Length: 143
Length: 385
Image 1 (cartoon, rainbow over the protein chains, first blue to last red):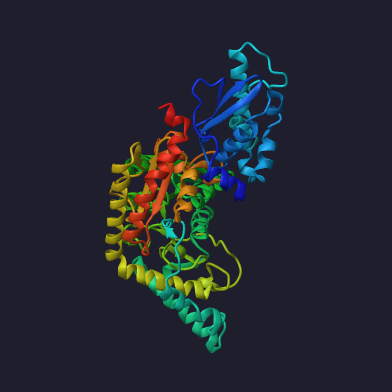
Image 2: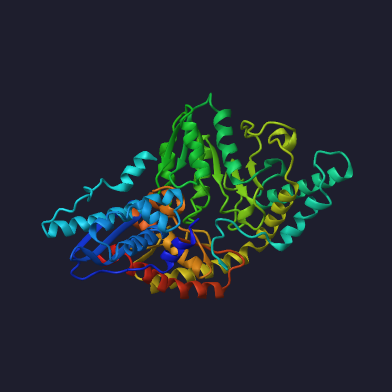
């Protein structure tokens, strides 16, 4: 059910771990639904120098975390905002329909980390969305 | 591959396959035909019926072949509800049934029936006193599974049978996981209807049976020809039924030895995991469970990830995580035990079968700890603990 790229990013996840003294950290999801993602960003001179993650979740959750952190590394903040859930899914050659929420979670974890960075530094990042209600709760009511 | 998912399905045993093959190839007759090819098929079906009856202590006239466990459950429950609707519209079951029972109950609830879903204790056991207290004057059916498919817990079937008979309520049990693995005697246990399935005991998928005690009247479910003494229409799955009969005969003959062997493997694996991997616990009663069932929660990790990494090492098992259930909620069985969601998501079911060896257990106990450690290293719940 998973593409080869998803399996690759699941079995050999890139950027696993913490960043000590990270510029921004964001955690989204909840244990109720079985997915929690935490993204750490190290930002210098408006560029994401490093990105790491910790994830509790299924294969797709790990793979999307891995891919999302991979896609934002070395990017400017406006470029990082282009890493949407669709971009993450495309880079993974797609996800099964029931796993799309994992890619949404990856995007939101990035945004949460960027918001944390902006808050710590008294900045405003143009185009950075406000925090969403819990993705899973929203999907549950739609289901 | 090391196959530890025998509660999901089992491979067909060679002896069983050999019993079935002629009815697909040379003895392909329709069991309703009068010529010798048909009579041969009919004879195979009746031989299988005798085997099935013998295994559960029933009479041949009480065994009706079905397409499997799900059909048997549907037929028993809907058939009883239909037949007894003038007597009452209240049904009792448990929160931990297989979906073949639960969703059938939900269907009936949408069609004018009322249902009580009995809770289970932390070990997964139904309290017979609570069951008796739930019986109302309009209760027409009690359906309690013999052995749970996820946690393997064996319910107090004899007590429930006793209560049901005394209170004059029909008692159905889904014994799909139990028959062929633990002793099941339907008359002694005062069971009125019992569902069983072939593919959990080394017969092919697509063959099962419903035991209906003589004198119990339930509505017909499959309408058509006069097969199965006019109670279940449809051309007999002769090969499947022949295989089911042989598989039941073998399972019954080998039960004592095989259960003892499975139990040893089960206890060795259970202790091997619980003693060597911290933050783990067994789901379901330690002794009152199927000889081949292990269900363990690994805190701070999620089950699907665990299954994928085990699969990478050539080990097949299953989990109660939401990601394997096709919904966002983890297993209803584990939630019914009182587990919080995150601990239910981190469960692993290992179900042992006749082809599992000590070497399989060695491999599992060797591969599991580093996989769990690796997933925990990656988990924010682990770093926050």
